[in-house]
Image 1: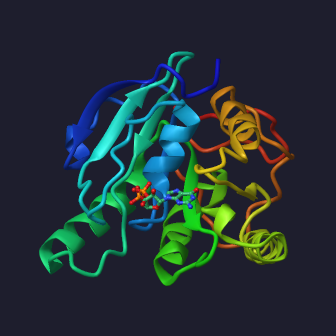
Image 2: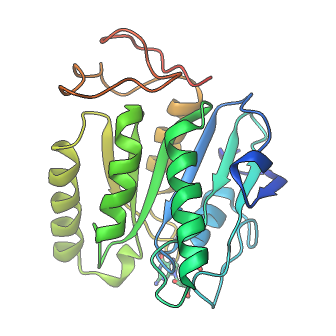
Image 3: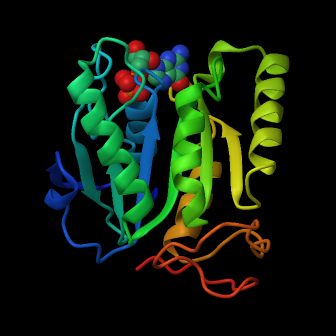
Length: 228
Ligand code: GDP
């Protein structure tokens, strides 16, 4: 059975204080509106409508939590970067997303969804900057890869990997297509590793000036990823 199959809806939170206590390892899915985040979640869950696939970008405005059958939580974060969102709502979500990414103690890693044709937008970079101080892993899914030629897709992947390698040793990226269902096994291997508390490589020494966040990995070189 795939990792996200038989996931069940738990709760939606509009504010951080509405979130359930951080008792189980959690993986957050974030991405620009229309990046293909909901489709990617549904593809990984092998379900037509676990996450809501919207024709109206910016519409999902809560943090939606799902319990995974094998243990752990999937958190579907509101899409960002939709131009028509009123300023007050944008400010609320900037505060809520940054607070969530920086303080959610149970967060094991961030799945960052980017349209393979337009990766690393200014707002994607903001998400990377918010999450980076936690020193937890990030995996970028470059979605809609079916819309690119093989050469273009390879170039996009290489560009994103180069950018990520400058930010942290635990940052990875892959191509993904919900339409063709490609990249599913690769993504599952990464996310199940996070939930099992494994990391792919021994973490590098933290960059100078980086403060440890509560609940982050202990000693450099430790193989366990602690997300409590
Ligand atoms: P979200 O706003 O990030 O959750 O994006 P959605 O999952 O709602 O997808 C936005 C649009 O992109 C929809 O029309 C989807 O059908 C389309 N889409 C999503 N993933 C893919 C993909 O892998 N390939 C193609 N060709 N279209 C996709």
